[in-house]
Image 1 (tube, one colour):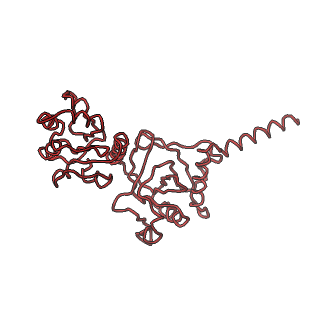
Image 2 (cartoon, rainbow, N blue to C red):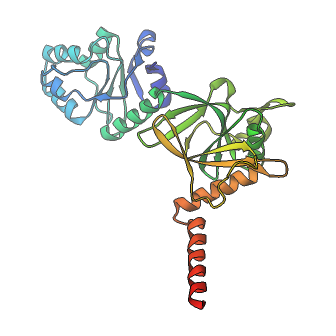
Image 3 (spheres, one colour):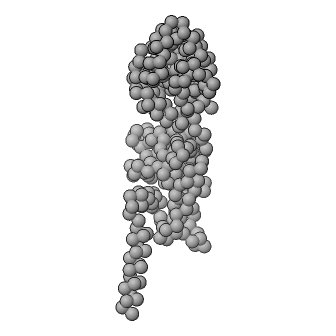
Length: 310
């Protein structure tokens, strides 16, 4: 799995200095960026030509001190045939020898006006996301009050219906039925829809609904970080459900842990309103306001007062 050079150009603004149809199809397979500093000085022992080669001010300045055929010979080594793309930052001048080396190895040569460190960060972030391993999970992914919420539960319990009701209440659908989950970084989980299901939601008895067409562009979102999970389960009197909210469950996806709220479903319960309340409670806890702790403190104080009166 890789990202084509064409995809990179479509996502990030560059000035294309040289390209061919074949070169644009080359795939980038790693998010690590190579800045060929030592290589420009002739040290190639640990050179990794399969990475994007990024020229900043330091690399460019040294390159410009090398003159004549020596510059072309050096660039031919740096711009190897397996190199997917070479990028020059800060709108620095592209010497003719670099263009010639790009043509020799059929490599796309790009120029960016961004500062080198900023461009390095943008490239790495984009490639980390695109190259991350995807895991498909069954559920509905929503953006509720700016919180990414993965709603799961048994088939037929009403996940899609809950998602549709949440859309009507002003929240945004990210994915229905199939959610492609990936790790954005070591601590962040994200999700997006399968392309064939983008903006779509399935309601039993009605069929496939195009949420964007019916509710507008503001009712959908392409992707979101996943902050919490909600699990819908049938109400069972024999089960003990959390009454105070002081024992949240934890679920793990791609080595990232998420807090999970389990909501019992039965006739008469407005699940979408309860989901909203769970999300607002989650946000409050993130901001340091814990209703459970407040209740427990009040209970402790009440017990202490009763003991004193006795």
